[in-house]
Length: 257
Image 1 (cartoon, rainbow, N blue to C red):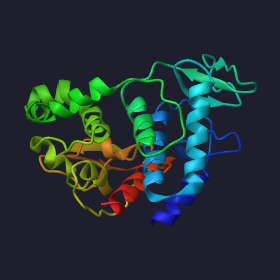
Image 2 (image 1 turned 90 degrees about the vertical axis):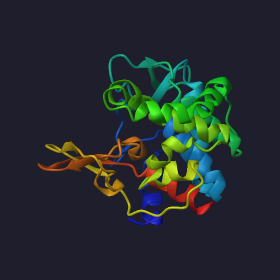
Image 3 (image 1 turned 45 degrees about the vertical axis):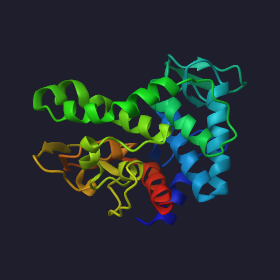
Image 4 (image 1 turned 60 degrees about the vertical axis):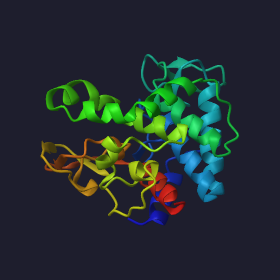
């Protein structure tokens, strides 16, 4: 897949209500990371000058922030019984407090010129993540401790560095291999083969000692946060095709280096 094909797929992931689907073809689901990934896409599109996607992503973010407190997703139907009626007529929303990634994605969009409100204050947390990223990297490499306690925070550390405008500590540089999004945060120019977008019914992950190419890691809505030494071996039948948002974000950011 090339960047234009990925872009066309992403455009098709926004419907007439400017809802966003992390899967293709478009469908309403319980996806909760729209602020994070669409926010990063919005910021990357501002950097690249992609006006059509700037419009779609900004309307999506403004709507998400308006439908109700702690909104993670919205739709013109009640996707699940726990979805609430929005104060915007005809829309329902999924309620769950944001973690760090959502506000970080929104902040990145704002930092690059997005016309969206930002009710979150993550400045101190982002500075903390960036300042201590090198120490985090050493803790991450402790076999049992890193795997059990630290891996889950990796993407937050990297996003903290991104929105704080700081390169990750040297102990994290190895994570930039075969990962153009993290490589961008580290100021490294990189090209990779487009990562997979399809998940299978019986796929499994195999962990190795060495970093695996991004093209054989498990597909997800944000493949850049998949653990780099894991290989995805697919079998069975295709069950899910992800919107290639992660690819276009990395592509636009890498083009700017």
